[in-house]
Amino acid sequence: MDQISWSDFEKIELRVGTVLEVKEFPEARKPAFKLKIDFGAGLGVKQASVQITELYQAGELEGKQVICVVNFPPKQIGPFFSECLVTGLYREDGAVVLAVPDLPVENGARLG
Image (tube, rainbow, N blue to C red; front, side):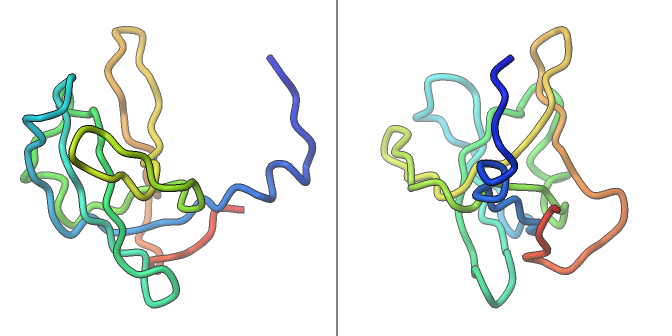
């Protein structure tokens, strides 16, 4: 495993946001959803593509808080631009479990 410096870690903006909207993403190569996530007044609403359809249904994601990297440049995924990276943990079977706060926090709160 490569080690990074503390200053490298400080460059990563990990923020909490609330999922406002979930849409199917049929154009994606692998099954995915398109999310709109509210990060509060400082960052606003960003969109992301997530490959989490094995464990999550669209209806259960709305209103869920998620932890995201918000300072990557936008990444084009087919016809869609993903503006943040929703974080998750891989299970042994390859399915992704979302990284989420266990209690509600203010949108835009920074992981530190």
